Each structure stands twice: as structure tokens, then as C-alpha cells.
Image (cartoon, rainbow, N blue to C red; front, side, top):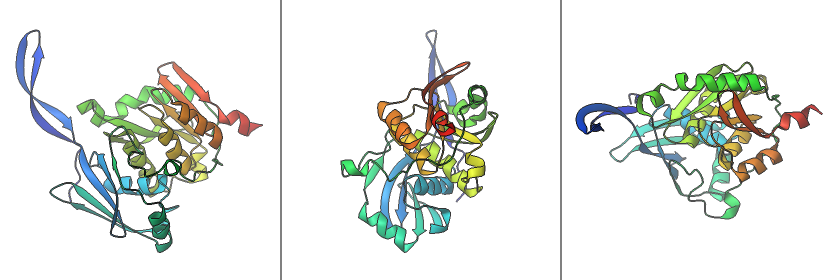
Length: 272
């Protein structure tokens, strides 16, 4: 299938100073995407239909369905009349584990754990991160300043989130966009996996920046790939802060030009 650009043109009426103009506007795409593992449907997520293979890889890793790419044997993307199906063939061991904790969920733009069947399913088996990145306030400030110019789809539509991998110096090296903040982060994780960036050499030399709030699941997804610093443009939640403290992840919020808030600085503890 041909890759979507992530937006479609739509005729709209724009009211301004009591006049109404008929214009063409770029609208962000949002479609249902079913994730199917070994022919068993696992989740339906509402996402922007770009970087679909990367999304499947990132989701599989950040949700703990697989532990590394070698456990994913094949990915097939199949468009249909009702949406898109991504079929993933995974190892028998991982599929058996998935069936034990299987949950049927419909993911919404703002909710990544909707549909969990029990309270125990909310917390994945994330372990404390072993990578170490010292909080660098100048680098964070520099990365935040670059975020807008590195989000072409957001600039075009005004409706998508971005998740970026930033270097030690604050340069944005990879960035993915999606209508859902969780999806954008999963796409980023998938792209990094494809490029062999989920290793200590890279993870010790950079950090994740997201154009959203820092929720519990954003911290959890960061931990699942051993990331040591998450920076969010908006605020953090109480559960996000608690989890960051438990897992040794530095957590920054309200990251704006020349100002940000440190909720957790795990690098200080790791340096001791």
C-alpha cells in the first residue's frame, strides 16, 4: 500500500470579521488500525496512518509483547474498507504470554490503557532503567526550541503530537507524529528499533521529548525501552512522577523556551 501523508484536504468555511470564506484546509487523518498477533486481534487504535510498521514495532516493544525485534518474524499491513489491519507474527513463547494477559481494548486519542480488563493489567512488568543520562538543561532548552520546526504535519494541520529523540547536545535526531501522543511515542520507538538505536550507546547519549503531557503510560513506555529521561511540553501527572521515581527515570515537564520543571532527577541518584 502507498504510504499516507497523514493529512487530507477538506473544504471548510472560515468566519473572520463577520465574513465567511470558502477555503481548502489540511486535516489530520485519523483511522482505526487493528493490531493482530498470530491471527488473533489484540487492539484497535485510532492513529494517523503513517509509519505503520514502525508503530507496530514500537507498540509491541513498549507494551512488552516482545522483548526485542528478533521475536517479531513478520509484519503485514493490509488496508480495508473499515480501517487498516497490521498482522504481526511473533514467537510462540511471546504469543503464549500474550494470551495469558490478553486484553481487548479500543485505544482513543487521549487514552492508552482504556479497555484493560483488571487493575493488575495497568502496570506492565517494567524494571528500573539501567541507562544513565545526566539532565542537561541547556540541551533540553535547545531541543524544545527545535520541536515546532521539526513537526511538519502539526504545522500543516494543528492536530497532531510529536515524539522526538534528542542528542546529548539537544539536537532532534528522529521525530514521529500522530494524532495520539502514545502512538507518536510508539512510532518513535519503532523507528529507533529499525535503526538499531535502542542500545546503551544511544540511550545513554540522549533523551525523549514529547509535545504532550507526561502521563503514567508515557513514562512506562519510556521505561520499557530503557530510556532514562522523558521531557514533556506539558505537565506530568502524579502517577507519572511516582513511576519515574520507582524506575529511575528523570522526568521534566512544562518544557518551554528558557523554562522547564524538574519533577524527578534520577541522574543525581545514579551519579552517587
